[in-house]
Length: 164
Length: 106
Image (cartoon, rainbow over all chains, first blue to last red; front, side, top):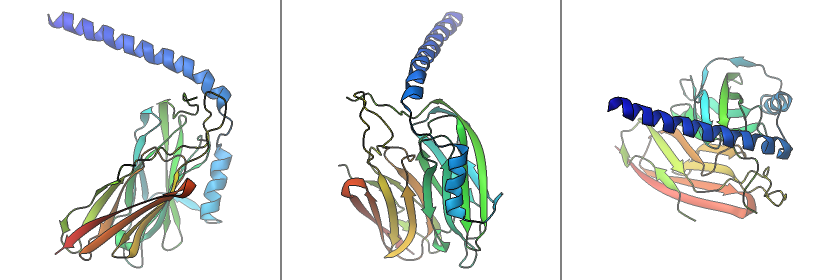
């Protein structure tokens, strides 16, 4: 009985995996031919330059939490937290999130201050591909800190649209 | 247009750090997608979100097309006084939406 049940669910799973592969296989060429604009590591670097200026961005103090394996790139929930006492003289001014392979390197920029109490926020992003995501925190003393993660996306955020 | 969903604690102790959650219904059309007729679908996104606490700005966000549809945000503030949170979203094509929430601080 138990064995039979297992066997059944196994089959169903294989069918689902198969369906996913077919969908992925069909979707991929379309995406590649239609996509015109794509951020590159270079455009991401220049977008970061625009925010930080000449300052150096050091790794540390920032934690970017995003699932390492994303099933659906259309909504990827993430949390950025920054180590900071958040006092009137030592606080996080802003947090910026960048990505490497969407059509545009910027994701979000948030501005906060000592009244936040906790330098952290949660939001949802679109990711067009398996790529690198960077969160950069701007401190009240003018220093910049960052965290970089690599995310694998199995179904990319849709670049084309089905609506005529 | 459905109203934004706001989650702010009704009451808090003075000095307590509280979480504010906001969710607003918006397609966040990226401006990078083509319709099946081959025509580029124009960008239509929320570009800015501002939260004020008794009139003072405590949190602001600039959104880009990489923010997922129906933008969701959780952020924090120190409960300093009873009063009102005001939220405003502005965006492409003159988009503007507001919401408020009250808090009692003991």
